[in-house]
Amino acid sequence: YGYTSYTTPGTMYRYIVKTGESTTYRKPKVRLNPDDYETRQVFYASKDGTRVPMFITHRKGLALDGNAPALLYGYGGFSIPNLPRFAVSRVVWMEMGGVYAEACIRGGGEYGEDWHNAGRLKNKQKCFDDFIAAAEWLIANKYTRPSRLAIQGGSNGGLLVGACMTQRPELFGAVLPAVGVLDMLRFSQYTIGWAWTSEYGRPDDPEMFPVLKAYSPLHNLKPGTCYPATLLTTADHDDRVVPSHSFKFAAALQAAQAGPAPVLIRIETRAGHGAGKPTSKRIEEAADQLAFLTRALDMKATGFAGD
Image 1 (cartoon, rainbow, N blue to C red):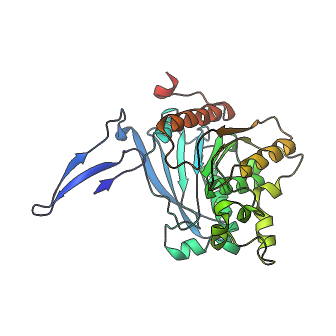
Image 2: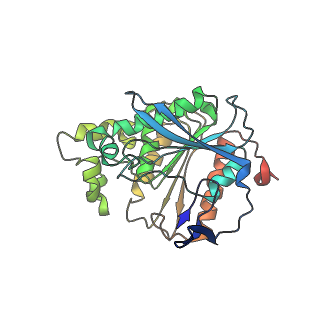
Image 3: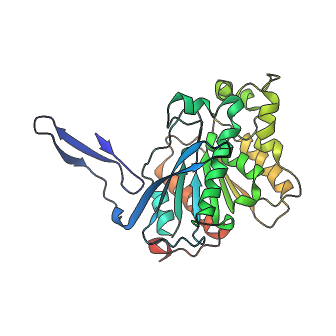
């Protein structure tokens, strides 16, 4: 069996049935001491009062003075749960002095199918409400402040952060939408998009069209608005969420941007939606994202990443 957490890489254990003893079978070697970090689970109230869980991890000794840079991640769709898991890029972020938070919003599978259904179809806005409430909780509890808060999500999570930044642009300092579903009025016309209609609804359904249009990131950008610094990432051979979602959103956001924050797009070549991406490409993308956040959030990196 296996175990992983935000600060423990995936470790395999051998269980001896006869004795009830567990021993380590295989454990990756990483230069990391989990005892230097702390993880807590909190619960906060969403817009409609629903109790939503969130994990928060950071180096021990964090001063709750609102000055720490924070990265809030979410997904909230297709009944997929957000569970604690190890990722090198997140450890690097925390070594740089950052707080990492993961909101287990509706639409996911954390509490079964009822939790999933509470964030799909006509209920999709509740996903965004949950995520925005998570950001507000982090700010209210002095983990960070808007100018130092970044949000990140990929695929359906790209839709999540895209919708939240268009609805509450003043709440965030930086946004990282990865391979996001950003055009909710045409998503079903491309490749496998038709299969997502059970999650989002059909744009050609008279009842669902206004629902989709109301939160579609591409269609809710407002010219003359100061949007947060944004780095979109996509790939030229993504046949799941075609890169035109990111292309169109990047162009529209650049045209609408009234503030000084940059709007950039990073296009990986000879790559797809993410699965099976070579380690070298993953490292390069993560390095670019971390460098972007360092600049956008006015960070002074600490720990080994800042040496």
